[in-house]
Structures are given as C-alpha cells and as structure tokens.
Image (cartoon, rainbow, N blue to C red; front, side):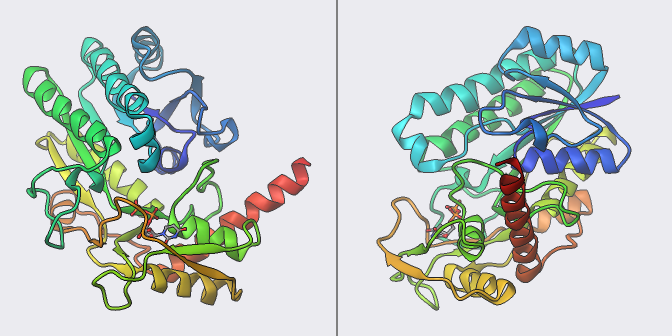
Amino acid sequence: MTVLVTGGAGYIGSHAALALLDGGRDVVVLDNLTQGHRWAVPAGAAFVEGDCGDEDLVRRIIDEHDVTAIMHFAGSIIVPDSVIYPLEYYRNNTVNSRALLQAAVDSGIRHFIFSSTAGVYGEPNATPINEDFALKPISPYGTSKMMTEKMLADAAIAHDFNYVALRYFNVAGADPKGRAGQTSRKATHLIKIASQTATGVRPQMAIYGEDYQTPDGTCIRDYIHVSDLANAHVLALEYLERGGESDVMNCGYGRGFSVREVIGAVKKVSGVDFSVDLAERRPGDPQSLVAGADRIREKLGWVPVHDDLEVIVRHALDWEQSLKTREVNAA
Ligand code: UDP
C-alpha cells in the first residue's frame, strides 16, 4: 500500500510526499532530477531516479513497492518557455503522462491524482472561476495539462480506476516546519521573486503592468499555501479510496490579492523596503484569477489552515533564508 509520487523532488511533489508520510503512508518518489533535487526528497520516502514516461520502469516500481495509487506532479511549468518550446512541453507533460497512465492501467492502479492548473481556463471573462467554465488554455503549458485531463477522463471510463485532477491556482509558501520549499532553479513566481529580493538574493524586482482594470491597477491572483494544497491531495486520495467519483476540482481559497498587496506583505513581514521597478505587462497574464472553491470543500471536506497572506509570505521568506544558509555552508 504505497503511493507513487512522480516529481516528488520538486516543489509541490515534495510537500505532498511529506503530507503522505506525516499521515503514516509509504511513499516512493520517481523523479528525473532535471528540476528537482535529490536532497528535496523527504526523509522516509523511497527514491528512484528516472522518467515517469518510462513505462517499464514505472511497472517495475509499482510491482516492487506494492503501489496502489499515483500522485502525478512531474512536469514542466514555465508558461513562456512552453510558448518557445511547445513540443518539449507536450512531450514532458502530455506524452509522458500518457505513458505513466498506460503503466498504471497495465499494473491495475486504482487511484490517480493529477496536478493540473487554472491555466486550463485561459482568460475567463468572469471571476470566480468554476470548474464548469469552458477550457480555453492560451499557452502550450495549459493545453498540455488539459490534454492530460482529457486522457484521464477517457481512460477512467474504459478502465477500472478513479481519479481527481486538482487545478491549482497560485501556489506559494513552504512547509511550516522548514522541511521543504520552492527550490526550482528557474522560479518565476511572484512570492518567490519578492522573497528573494527581500533576502538579497536578487537586487530588485519589477511589477509587470500597473494599468489593469483592478483597484490598484495590478493583477489579482488567488495565492494558496503549498501545505494546504498538499493536504488537499491526501484528502483526494482518501476520497478516491472511499469510492468517490472521478472529478476535477479547483484548488484555491476563493479570494485574491493584487501584485502590490503581495509585495506590501513581503516588505512588511521581512522588514525590508526593497526596490521595485515598473515594467511592461507580461504577455499572456490574465487580469484576475480567483478560484470558485466550493467543490473541493464540499467533496473532500478540505479546510485550509494557512489562509493568510502574511503566513504564506513568512514561510516563503524563512525558506529563502534557509536556502541562503545552505548555499553558504555548501560553498
Ligand atoms: N509578477 C510580477 N513580477 C514578478 C513576478 C510576477 O509583477 O517578478 C506578477 C505577474 O505578472 C502576475 C502575478 O505577479 O500578474 C502572478 O504571477 P506568477 O508568475 O506568480 O503566477 P501566474 O499567475 O503567472 O501563474
């Protein structure tokens, strides 16, 4: 009775692995370490270095570790890169997911949880965004995730497994106990960038556009603490094990903060008044993305415990500080 966590050496996957271990489950992590780090795999999890698109390897892991469920995090997530390298994104996110699913079906896996994204909605003209909104991704990244959702839906009808696809909004923060955090080499996310600026890893940062139709002119996002998100995965697994119907669920708190509000929170919590430039709008940035968040609460009984911007920022800052110390010690 082990959970296979693909991408468990990465940001969200490592937090999900921790949440599973904390709940007394056995975990095996499969990660090719292109983005993740070996040291980020939580103590207590078995680790296999390899590709989730390697069907033979996945079948072997399932067999050797007595895997009964899969949480699939491995994938590429940088939206502008997906525009430049679309075929890489379709291979890594869609083709590899197909292979993983094939191995799962061949090996009789009964439960599958997929890391999807609010990016599948594209630029909806209403907010909050509900799960039944049309899927109109505007980047190869969003399309690559949508295609995997479609494969899952079709495969779950034809084969004997149930699944939950969680559509993440803006994930941020770090494990409150400091055991995991955002380590990606090419991080582009606002709270990470602002935390790096506050801790001196970056000299300054920029706001991408101040002329949006929002109260302070900057974009609004639904920031969710990574540990609440990790817990949602554990609840999704319990739901599937109880025989829950396959479903897609938004993962957000149902409220938004502007870029300026986020930067203000990072300055306040860190006590550092760092320099912020103004820059052009970033292409493809929707104005406002806030989750309609009822379904996940109703179906999974999910009750977030870190729904507080300053708490999210505190944990992100603590993690950045610990990374700096780690680098100094390693040098
Ligand atoms: N953003 C910004 N400066 C940065 C990084 C992000 O102004 O250095 C803005 C970005 O334009 C968007 C919001 O912050 O409006 C959230 O961006 P992020 O990349 O964190 O997540 P996304 O919503 O794009 O997935």
